[in-house]
Image 1: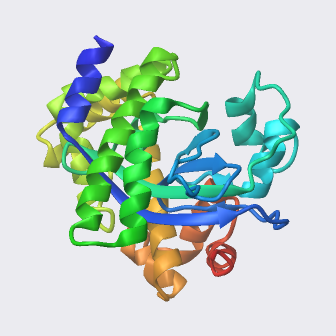
Image 2: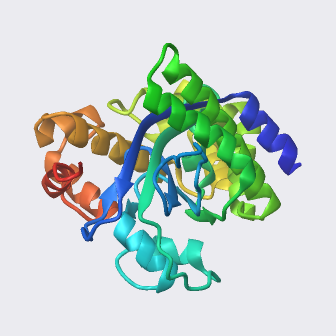
Length: 300
């Protein structure tokens, strides 16, 4: 059953590589948040050796919104402490201390959308995890880095294709190593329900409009009570909580990428009251909209 679910995801999957960066280990401890999901590939040597071999140590899968930094990432490989504890302890549990810390990291930022616009990572509530050195992933990684360096004709298209392959390999790894939990499988199964897919799509297309249960139900030709019950039963969360999460995620994007005033951002994501928007934003992210925007300015 699980394979059938994931095959359906893969058939409808679009993986887009949004950004590639090569970073060196430094003493900066401030964490950063990405708008996109990340693969952080750590290695001890330069990107390519003289023989053009590709060096890979650990690969960290980090969903969007998690606070990460290379400094704390390395600390967590040897000692369970620091601000990163909420996320990293889950992916480093059982790892033996390693004192040969990586000095370089390649950061791939990507989006993985299924069924025309549903964020698969968010839908499945995938958690951060660590993938130990794995020969199968080296080929698509090497292809991505070569295209990133050379920037020849079609480099973006080839990189997206390689990222697609890489993400499918990650899904295989999740299945083989039981990274997917029962609740994750249950949420993924919602993709088999065309009514749930209609709800997801309607919410994403109307974040600035009326997204009450009754308005959503009317749009998908269901009763308000049945819509709320169906959504909670399949996804494990209330419909209105899902709406708030999507609105706050969109607000994060606007705060990071535009100079719009807070009240304009609030309006763009369906909040008539800017003060209420600020309270919800802080409750969901731990920061006020202004503090979040200022922190994002320090991200290189």
